[in-house]
Length: 296
Image 1 (cartoon, rainbow, N blue to C red):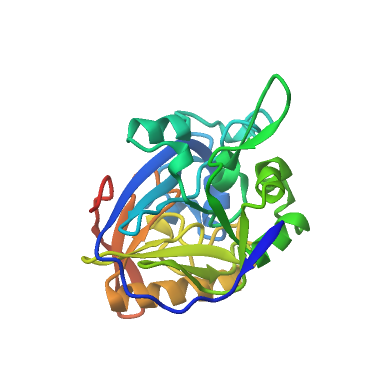
Image 2: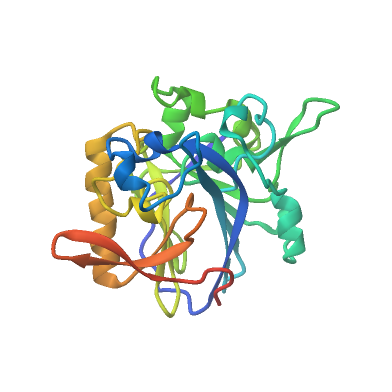
């Protein structure tokens, strides 16, 4: 059973909001793929690579504790169900997200909402786990509503040729079967202080959560802007299915972030978690680094 959630009215910002970053592990992606048409002589000055052109990428999750009692998890990494199939990504330093949450005083059963920016394997793989003795798939966060855009869900079920290898039905089947899937059609207010906004380009209907705190708004940019090195709108990944759309969506996100002094959380940057951004003439650049180990 799937529930479609209509656009909700804007609510006032939460007075308190606690944010914590969890890096669920790392993998290598080809630098040429990450930076598309940008030559290595340019991108290598902003982001390091190894002798095989591999760039270390993080799989970053965000935990948000709201003042109305919600515990919201944004993205959850690759999990461990498909690591052999994806071994060419050379995963390392993987953590079990459930264990890491418990170490921080949060039981997986306490998660009220899981927001999935999109359904590529490195963002939603831990949504389900497999009982190796029976093959049964079960939800890692059994009491949580799981938020996905309808456009992304339809793309997941009927993927284009460029994205088919990034989707695994096992990652989401139990969510659908349990009735815990929530689809949004447009920008949606999840709760006071958290808005879910939609961006295309990398993949259809990617969700970018906007989290308002008393000090500033944080934008979990997903693969709209995956790295601090990707802030320049023309630096578009070859993984993006619609590059021109990606360019326009990045500019839309960056214009607002600059104007309103929002902070961008980079989901894949192994070296920089979060920064503000600035506009110098017609160029967007990272500005100040923001610590996100624990806010609130």
